[in-house]
Image 1 (spheres, helix red, strand yellow):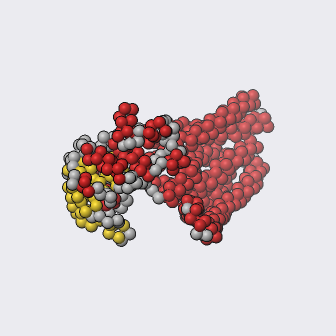
Image 2 (spheres, rainbow, N blue to C red):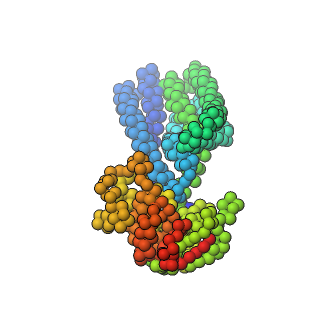
Image 3 (cartoon, rainbow, N blue to C red):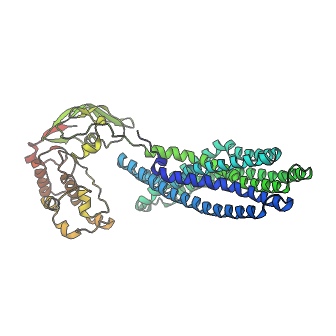
Length: 525
């Protein structure tokens, strides 16, 4: 399986962001030091006041410029990262194939809500943590030059502030995970009820539906309260330590001046550095806490972004045969296919028959590697195990049509050619061949909206899906009840077209046309 490495998508931008952030951190510490020297020069007549004043003004100008640059790169970095993550998740989801509505709702919620959280609090937060550590190191070097006692007071309290979120890490992560799961459950139930709103209405189920939503909403409220209480506890403890730190700095600093151990400028620098340190110390506490909360989301992202790696697998050029060896498959303890062995050969036509629920459609989906779960036995194409084949190369040789085809909100042409390089003449010829020539004028290049798709008959949708398969000139057709919605005349014509195709055909059928049956080899489930 392949795990995505988001930072590598924007490596150069991340480098700029880090460099600018580190320089901004260093200048933030240099400015207070220069101001301290300026005060000492004024009070104790030490050094050139004009030089220190010039350096201070220059430092603050640089501080402003780097502050703007830091924010710019931070915002741009977030935009690019979210873009990369959304693309990766979408591609991974496409590779997994069709999903239930509840899964799609949960996936959509994760992309819209949790991906920005990951980018800001985990990936962007990691960079901010590095910047905070840089400031802390620079402040430490300067404070120990002033006096070790002030350094101990400032850093001792700062360390305690930083430790608070680490102590609360497990509790915070658990609360964030529980809150995210509560949101997913709410979205899934809401999606399910709204999708079946008509059934809810006619079955007088509205009060039950309302109660279900209220229960899920109450679960969200409960988990959010726990999450916010945890955050308030962390921030409250950190704030209390900041107040205590300020008091100790002032008291000890005045004492050291009284004893002529440090100068007024030294105390001024210490106070300013304490404030400079306060921001990263408080921010570091927040960043660590936010990163801990986002960690479960990162783990979930890695799971969603995992895809099967096709690199190193075998490409298929020509399909000579498909061999099924002792194939068995079941779900939830129910055996659907049991010990099926058969060899399908190039150019021959096969009809798969059997009672409803006998596993015919599942059999086709297993050959096309579209069925979830694992099976027992082997499926070989040209003697190569299906698991060892590059599926993109295989799909390029297959035309797969199921009983209920899906039409996209694209133009009719794009719904059929699906981005492939197909001549207009070939596209139009196939539509006319399938008795769909009238759709060329009806839809032209107009995008099919929901209303247009709804007005298409089941037979029209099936023939559009068959046209989608035929334009690719496949070597193998996997067809599941593709004439179930057609009248007898159209069904016969479609079968005759398929029988004339120079390709292997595996055709699941219930409505057998006696006159054509003899042209198939039969496989009964």
